Each structure stands twice: as structure tokens, then as C-alpha cells.
Image (cartoon, rainbow, N blue to C red; front, side, top):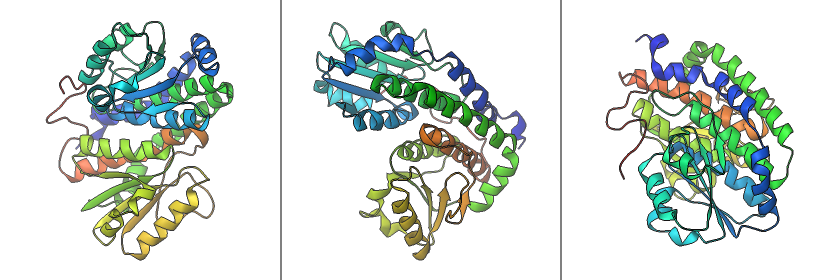
Length: 349
């Protein structure tokens, strides 16, 4: 199969330029009034919500707000709409992340919010969408070119601009965050320049698995969840995403020759826990693969990824998983990224 003309591969390879464009256009100024109100205690709670990759992209933002002591909730829109709607109070800030801004659950939630005093904030790509039109006063555009298949550019851009917005809200150094992400865009570009080499390496490390699990902690849990999502979408491979600590509470019994586990090293504070889990999985006969930037004393085998750190880490972690979806799709004899039963935007619940 000629991958040079594959739309999904094309979207993957364009991510660095798209990220640079989003960073260039990010403007924190319109967010300052919301930030001032937030830090003055003007919101009783912050509800972060979305579906699919947009929802998982909100996880690092929720962590950052929670670490700042803010009353933040991370709830997917379907559950928020049908079971947790009382979480949205009159003094809530409802932060909806959706690249299309027109998914079925998003539109239904917007309808339910009409006439309420809750403040709506939108991280969105389609500025003509129902979400963007409903949140005209408080928009965080992600400035990604429209995608043809599985989420790539929109996921990275959402992670980037939403994390910068979170820095604005909690009063941390936005410029430093911006520079970290700009450096990450360069690293991603350099990595993807050699994408065919990395694809071969990844293919050798990860043969078609019988059981595949993605494990992470902290912001890397977003990568594990999104990775499992795009593996099913782009390559039709079922994968399990779990918080690494949860894996020990039962799923560890999967460990053995039929298990392939991808472990995202993540932040330094919990990396020793991931290293111990990696060693245990190797001991139990599983194929355990470490995912981290280059560095000394890394466990083997290791999946190569762009060299980044800090708030840019989850952006870089997903890149080798995207290439893995291409490899596994080819192993399954299907076109990488092609939809069989759904489409780019989910229009029904």
C-alpha cells in the first residue's frame, strides 16, 4: 500500500506545522477577565467536558486546575447530560472541548444550558459550529486545518491551547509554557521527518498483539486513553487504556506471553512506579514496551518518540502511537485511518 498518498498519514505528518500555527495565533488577552473572576472565587465549580479525543485532551487541564486547588470536574458529555447534569450550577464555568463543536452530545448539552446563568467556555476548531456560536464571548480556537480521518492535528492543538489557557487561569507563566510547546513542535517535526524509519522500528517492537494495554499516570493517562481510541479507529485493533495503578488491581492477571503493554513514563514524580510495573511485566513474560523521550537509564525495549518535557509531553507521546496505528492497520490488511461504520463527526447518540 502506498502510504505517501494516504490521507491519515498526511494528517499525521502535518501536525508540527499545524501546532506552530495554533501557537502563533494563541492570544491570552481575551481570557484574562475569566481568569480574574476565577481567581477571585467567582465560579463555584469548573466543569470540563467533551467526547472522544477532545475529552481525553481535557484530562491534563483538569489535573492542572485541581493541583491549583480549584473546584474542577472532568465528566464526559454523555454522562454529564444524562446523569450528572446537577453538577452544573448557576455559578459554574462549563468548559466544553470539541473540535467539531457539533457532536450529538455537545448539541444536546448546549440546548440544556439555554437560559441558565452558567458561563460557557469553548475550545473548538469549527468557528461556525453550534458550540462556537453559543460561546461567542469565550472562545479558545485551536486553529487546525480540517482533518480527513482520525483525530490528529485537532488533538495536538487542543492539548496545546487548552493547557496554555489553564496556565492563564491559574496565573502561571504562559510564555514559558508557550516556549515549551514551540520547542515540542520542532521536535515533532524532526521526528516525523524520519517517519518511515520510525514506522519500521515500531513494527519490529510491536507485532500484532493478542491483548494490548496502554498504561499511564498523570497527564500521560490522556495519551493512554486517546491511544486506545485511535488504535480502534485507525487500525481496528482493540486496546485497553488504564491508569497504571488500576492495572495492578485485577488486570495484572493478563500478564503473560499474550500481553503487549505500552507504558508511558510520564512525569518524574510517578516514573519509578511505572518502572517497577514495567519490570514486573517483563518478569511475568509480557511484552512490556517503555514510551519516553531519550535519556539515561531507560528501560528496554523502548518506543522512540519526540524529545519533549513538561506540558508538551502528552503531545509528543501520542505521535509514536499514531504510527503504531498505521503499522497495525497494514498488518490487518486495511487502509490506515479509513472509517467503516462511523465518520469524522458523531451526529447521533
